[in-house]
Length: 187
Image 1 (cartoon, rainbow, N blue to C red):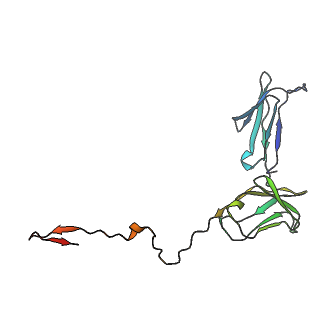
Image 2: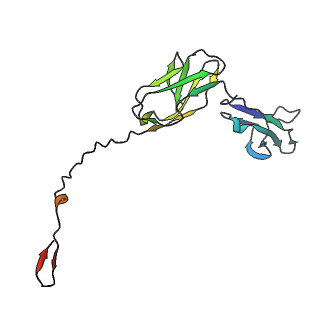
Image 3: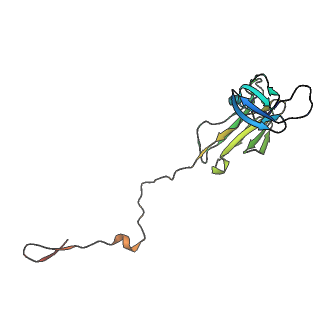
């Protein structure tokens, strides 16, 4: 199931010892292991495919299809950046049931809150709330991570001008030129 760890083992028949092995997905080398075991952490749909392994001197294994099922737990969150100061609610739900279940919410891999309703509300978001969120429902699994992006509030223009307090800001330049008669004129 999506989000879980998957272990692939490669063993030579009639031996219990672990031998070094190379692993292939869809014909391409994806890893080597000194123990004959490869772990795919937090498997996703992109990991789906035909796998085989090769133990030097023993040959290749037959190919096996790795099917990755979509998880039943999903985290509903805004797909667009949220403005600083706005409220946001993240909802953890199980696609297989309509009841709200207890959920643990994580931000960047760290538990931040448990909820008996499956909801996490942040009343006034700030840049520090930005990150990757997921939820875990006991007995149902965990959701894939979702990114929560925060858009900084832009400064508001009230239409007024503020004069600079720099004494040089009000200085005007005076240029003198001479007309055809040779008299100096100011501009």
